[in-house]
Image 1 (cartoon, rainbow, N blue to C red):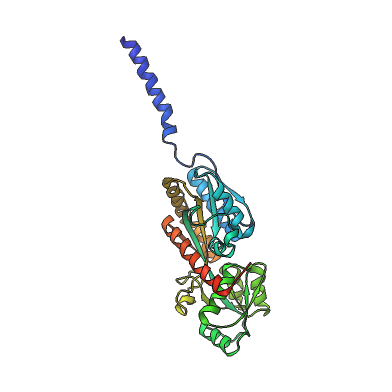
Image 2 (spheres, rainbow, N blue to C red):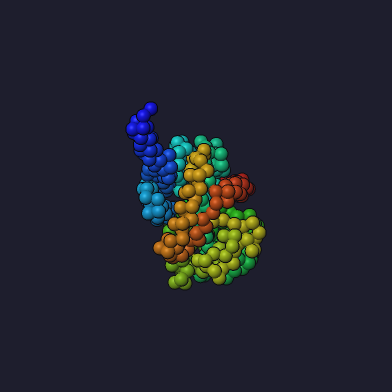
Length: 323
């Protein structure tokens, strides 16, 4: 082969390598990612999801599309993710209801939360706060339990919705403190809080954002939180597990892929969530809403899910709770 021919061949090889390089080393994500939120627009999960999606868009240059798929306590959206291709382009952003529903819906669930979902990030934790109407003469958990024991069945325990963490926290109190009380379900956190404010029910394990304005105005008295450690939203309040070891419940929020997504893609989204949570506007939002950012690892989320399923299964079975 003469020298000119060799030069042309070398140039062609170099151009080919340059063209191939971006394809070989393209960084994930290379196209829009669908973020399934299995609850209605405007709720706590949806608002957090949109905030994080925008931050991840800014960081990666790819759009994270919010897709609200409601129904069956979050199971319809979760099923969509389970059935999707394990390519890293469909994410689930859900709550602690996933652990509750595993037992509550039992055989009606068509997938296994543990076997069919890939943990990505434990995003945040929202405390439930035990509140009472000011007419209830209890300033501590011990006071409240003493009243319930002196007058069995006298306290009405409001719950956000049947099967919610608010509901199961009320059941936990009955079981662990060995007290009686009437469970009164409502159609959401807002109506449940207003029922306590009006004196329709005596107490409620409320979500922090819904209860905070009424606590500040003195219309509700807060006496404890349900998270394992004290929360930034109510630093002065004791935890329920300081009175009853093991009493822990919160509205945790987390992201999952369908099972089988590669570890590098899981690590990428985990890192993006952690980065988003450090942004000032995101941190300010969480502080205002009484939500604690977590940014937990995939392993931490996987362990949390298993613990939560086992815990709520015991409560549901002992309380004979059915949907």
